[in-house]
Length: 461
Image (cartoon, rainbow, N blue to C red):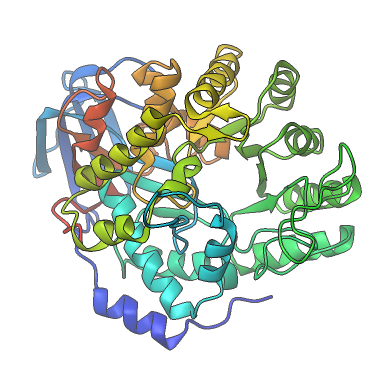
């Protein structure tokens, strides 16, 4: 399936929005950093300089080792912490989280609600995507790993982002995810090994930079929704997975899998999937498998709280919040209330589930399984996913690495982004505070640069 010409409604929307940024062109920019976190996991250094020319970093290091050339444009961030832009390792820009019952913030129809959004008119979906990308950008996210959109929405948005028409993070797009019958309509079903290869080829031809598959142990939609597959089985056959992964790797792209349980995580890893989204259940056997297969995890904490948000909460995001910090604070209050109420979720309380998950995350970390973080459809809340790792027992620096250099390695994009190094893309943010000491300071983003383009001062709405 080839990407068709951009829809008129999309062009009008993008053109009317314009772009509010400073383009670096080929001017050398010197950024003076009071503290610098390079994203590699190393401790911050004091008094550093980054030289940017065009869209790349030309030099970075202690101020005593980096000479600022005559005529360079200097940006003084000497009272702030400078670090790589954040990487959202799981995003759906045009889909919002489930909005549950107004009164008690509870509900479990999230899948249907999201699929209904994906069946809306393309112009409505794109409008929501433009808004959500802006929210993420202003919260310090400079890279979005998009893992499934209908009608190539993500590829159209990427075209507009790359052209500088709309302000947004850098997008790594997958095109429509791949799932067999009884999957997530309106994403089309794909069945059989050769159809898997064809779908991979179509997505890559259309511009996809990676492939996303959705693995589940029960039928997801239709009259038989909830009906489990055979014991130890998922919606994919081994032959289908082998063909899909082989074709993707043959074409030079990686595969990431939605896999939330022991069965699907194990099957995905055994058949060569490169990274696992969610990985909600971990045990020692699976951790061993992650290590043997050199695969990593994208943890998605905030998405697990989505059923406690209502339409009023997202109305607040769009029309009342004046900054990412206000939106994150609003969301944190909702989640804190959920945790304090400690209701039963299945057979466990919320707090017991968190304790179990924290133990799983620490086990994987201690065995050096690489981590990234992602919001799924909880736009603008990557900070909460990073803080969740700290709550689990990660150091703030380890958690920041998951959102920068570590996350980039999990996704296979570390050649260009994730760390502040010579030759890498100039995706840089600054924070008013020390997030490697107090992770809550991460909400205080000030300076934002994506590929040499500066977005500091861009309005939240």
